[in-house]
Image (cartoon, rainbow, N blue to C red; front, side):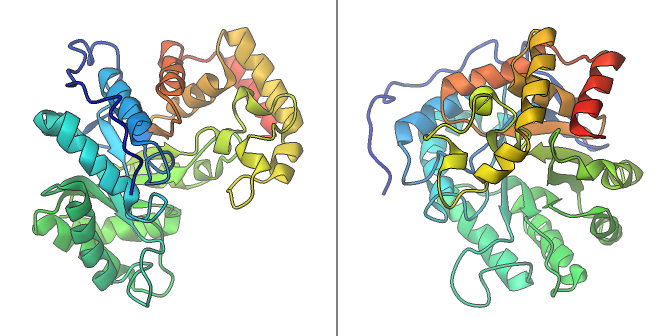
Length: 338
C-alpha cells in the first residue's frame, strides 16, 4: 500500500489562469491539442513513493496548464500501483475536471505471470485495458497505446485489438510506442483501413539519441501522425546533475536502473559543452534539451518525469525560450556529432 500522508488533505482549487501561458500543439492532423510539456508517471507515483508528493506534482502540473498525464499498466513499483495512486488522486482532486484532462495508458511490457501478460496479443491488450480502467476508476482513457512492437504476434491482431478497444468505448484514440518507421507505416495502414483514430507514436528522443530523425519523422508526416517524445533528458544526463561526475545519490550510481555510469562517463565531454551552450542562451541544460526537441514540427509534446513540484516548474520554464539561432543549432550538431 502507498504511504498515507494527510499534508495535502485540503480541498484543491486549480489555478484560474492555468491555460494562459501553456503552449498547445496539435497531434498530427487530429482534433487533439496537447500541452507542449506533458507529465509522465513512470517514476515517483508507485506504492513505494510518497502519495503526498505525487499529489503535489499533479496539482502543480494542472496549475501550469499540463492537461496530459501519461501512465502504463506496469508503472510503479509494484506493477499497477501508479495507476491505482493516480486513480486515488484523480478522485480526490480532479474528478470535476475530468473533461479537461487527456489521460493515457499503455500495455506491452511484462505485467502478470504466464503467457498472456506481455507483448501484443489480443487477449493481453483487452484484459489490460479493463484492469487499467478499474485501477484508475475511469470509464475510458483518452488514448491507449501498444507499448512496444511484438515480433511474434501479427500486427493485424494487435491493431485489431486497439480498434476493438475504441469501438467498445474504452479509449477515444489509440497510439503506438517504440515503433520504428517500417512498423509505424504498417500500423498506420491497418488502422486507417479500420477507421480507428490513430494519432500518436510515443518514442524516446533526445539530443543524445536522435534515431527518429532518420526515417520515422517523415513517416509520421506522411500519415498525418504526431510524435510525443519521452526521455528528453536522456535519463538525467542532459541536466546539471552530472557536470562534475556521478553523485552517489544519482540514478547512474544505483543498480537496476536504465542509466549506467559508463554511459554518463562516455558522454561527459558532450554534456559539458552542451551546458555551455545552454548558459549562453540563458537556460539550464535541461530546459535547452526540451526546447530543442520541440523545434520539430511533428513533436506535439515532450513527456517529462518529475520527482518534485519544483523540478516540474523548472522544466516547464523551457517554454520561455524555444527559438534557436542557426549558429546555436550548428554548435549543438557539432557537439553531438551529427
